[in-house]
Image 1 (tube, rainbow, N blue to C red):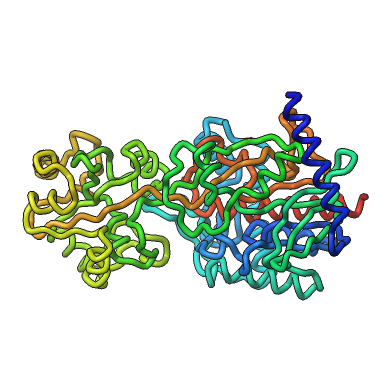
Image 2: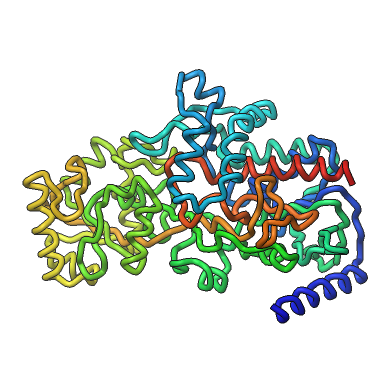
Length: 495
């Protein structure tokens, strides 16, 4: 404990020393660190409430991972009412809490769920249009509000409105330290791309730096499977989380990652090779053994967990009959709105040939040849395929109870295999917060002047990401950002 106190004191002392050497000083009400989805929502929400706001973004471009999102979670929204869809906030709250076995922060979850419908109206009022309401898998709950132009569209819309108010988004400007005086966070130290040191004095600071999905050291220290391939993550190095910890905030949720669909390395979300690999075909580990009910592909975290236990690499195997089905009837599992369910894989041959050149796609006229190409043991592979085909013949998966409608024989050559790996959309925790998104210590006492939102905030998921209700990650980004922005603006007026 003494070492931690001394280290913290050293951080504060060095921060104050750097502040004295700043090349430029900016005074404002609120500083938002990060211009992704959560930071954009926070900054505009605070500005709407009358606060003066400055946004810092270390990348040259804004938007973060949120720009690739397709739709947002909400319950009891106007779109749901128009469809007479009756899922309630109480039901949604209980589903989230039960999934986490009540390891999630109930007050935070409740605040998120209760704010969600209003955030749809807020986005609509600010020029965002919604195309449809849907679920992300057959039989799923209709919480996914698909917006026009993907996340990049609404993020740009809100950022344009924000800058039109006269407030800056300082790109290629990295926050380096928080300034803390008399127990309160009162600003940020930053550095521009040209090396200029900037001191920003503020009444509140909102951290929205997107987690630590690109920080190998933090991943190895905190998450269960650090080797998952990050998807759409750039520069997520945990800067904001570490600054919050140094300021006295407690850690929470550092082990939670957004497990995504396993997929082949180097293939985009529009790839038909990638789409084929994300179907409930035959999944085999490098030893040629089947290891799961492949139908769990509908629930990304389940698929990710199963694959991680196998070391993070598998081969998705199917035959010509199955390929013909995907080309003529379409796929059973959609890849978001880019390659939707029932889409026909008419570009498969072209994309598969590219995969062959890149060493992730294999085609053979016999099982022995497929074993040689992939490196799976031939005898194990033949034994597994024989057993699987026996299950198909009796329409009963005696091993892992996969739904019979997904049982398709591997019998007609040529045979195909696509090498897939565990993937992640990023980390989903780091800093302990309350329902106002204020950073808190282990005793849940707020660190004055400090808020943490989006993927930097812990407590939303307990210890596991869930996909029960689609759009929850971007939904939490927007709603946590709004809650923090509004609260910070009110606090600024009071100080």
